[in-house]
Image 1 (spheres, rainbow, N blue to C red):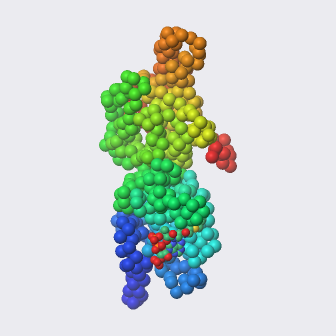
Image 2 (cartoon, rainbow, N blue to C red):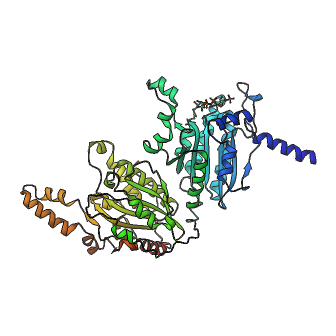
Image 3 (cartoon, protein in one colour):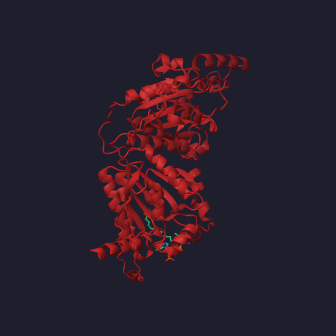
Length: 508
Ligand code: HXC
């Protein structure tokens, strides 16, 4: 008996070494942690339970029958983050470059199936060279089995990917099917084909960083939702994000104790809006003053900065925030901002996360660049997302709500539950000058000035909308947190169903 116990420990020791000391050293030399070190940081101490530690590949080609490593390049299992369960798989770059074989994919599939069945989120940590070249079509099939499960789990359990090394081919398409992707600056890359293939096919010379580094994917392509300086920071922030998320679409949002009171009055908000309507101000100040303890997790911070998206809590419960940001492009809605906000709204709706929307939007961005780029279709994505959402929706117009953008930003007409406006709100088809120049095209300058003043007086306020019931109440800025908190508490029992359908046809 003792021998068997010792043998088990010896087998475990070998498996835990992965590709061996030298490759672990090389991994550290590149500024990266190993798969197991990453799991240690992500999960609560002693909570990790490994599954399939001794699985090996069965490839018989290229001498692979004599080259086997227990675990086959991916560490799988489950553990807890602040006491709440999650499933994990972490690719081990020290074993065949973390590449995916048939056996490796079956290990991932097993935890994917368990996570879906049990209604628990799944986190993938990727640092891998794509399909195991020696396995050929078995590896391709293996990827497709992962993709299929990613797709079926979408909207049922949160799926998050950490890109923590080079990722190519199949190792970028699985992440793209998950809810959030985070990268590490200078050590992680994502591309369908690497710089060498790019050179051969298109003759472009490009570095891995320029082609698919964290900066490209968080600020240009919007493939990734955030980037961090190193593995430790990335995994610590991931723990913070997980604390905001429901376990599945059946559980509702998590609740945490908070010392922040519902009635916290913020007098500074009464002077947030500048006297000059064309002056910007920082909408983030409002977000941070409304959420519990100023704790806000921003999603896609470096992309389409004209709209803010992210998670906060109100009275201990998770809320999704969408807010126009007047500091960038006056908070206008363009294609990028519309796509970014639409995806976020849909995540919230999938997982029963209530949505609070702060509106200060001068409209959709005009111009050929936007129209040729499909602004109509991208803008429609946001419209569609808000219109189909059945979660509680609380909207506050702080200043401008002009034109189609007024409709889109969770207006009453899109089943907004509580639609409030600050006294500084301007709800109109467009700004005064533009409106008057169209209506009074052939008038003198004096007449236009007089008409502009009249238009401002009549329309650039919240009261016309309030008279019609499109705004439920004009509120004092300093009471915004209290209003939002009371509305959300009331709406916790909201029930609203959309007509039955197989699925919708959102304009993609
Ligand atoms: C088998 C692989 C491998 C792979 C790396 N290795 N990629 N083994 N299959 N795909 C092994 C190497 O042989 C090496 O083994 C170890 O991993 C580390 O690799 P290095 O090249 O030494 O490391 P580095 O210089 O850091 O480069 C990492 C890399 C590079 C950028 C990932 O290895 C690379 O370009 N790999 C191939 C990427 C690729 O084209 N994959 C196929 C994509 S197509 P030793 O024993 O020396 O430690 C695909 C199809 C699916 O994925 C598509 C579905 C839609």
